[in-house]
Image 1 (cartoon, one colour):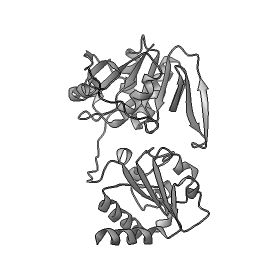
Image 2 (cartoon, helix red, strand yellow):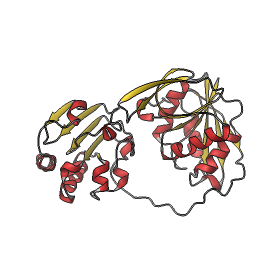
Image 3 (cartoon, helix red, strand yellow):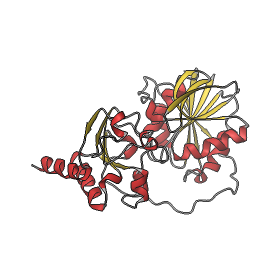
Image 4 (tube, rainbow, N blue to C red):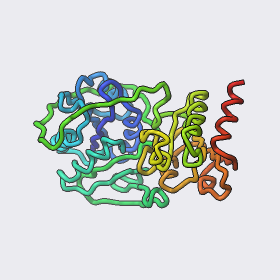
Length: 311
């Protein structure tokens, strides 16, 4: 059995999600090919070729692939699907959008958010916002799905370099068109790959509380996260959102300030190595998943820690 993994990148560099997804897909099949689809992304293909477990890198470069349109990517993947027993994406924004389209075009059942591999066609995935884990098995001849990358260690560099094979992109339909790209520049680490994340929720109350959280993050070189409630209240941007409807993260250290611990939020941090919770409600559910807990006001604790670090 041979699997096809679609690389996650920004045309300049390979994102960590690809190496993590490769670890999962390698457990499903005998060999793995990786598709790098983009424009001006030859350097990305060279990065992929150095990963352990990659048999061949398929490189598709076309201006239509530059902006990560899921319809265009899905058409390309389907055109290359013949001969593969597994077709998998990382569970990123693009992967979640393109994977169902590929499954529909191939008339196969999709498997989303795989967190463990029990066999070539047997997987585990979270259900009910991660409260339960379901074991699913399929008899499909082609398995199409996404991998929750935070559940797997990244594949290491290999001892050999895989060959890079160029392929062509089929003509795209008119399902969508690129309008504009907006990027927010930040000196902080990227949330999904940061080793340390500090996050705030409703308990930080206002903009002043989140300003204290940001000051603390900058002092220790951490990324900043938030709950959906805090985002909906307008206290922080939506790209900070962590949880079932936000980003799944797996930092070495996660510190939650003023977060009660709704199941939709804790689903996004279940793979964190150490969880520290600060909340003034001793009955807050966050303490059930935390390794360390402090019953205190979140904003005041942020300011106190910041003062200690400033000395």
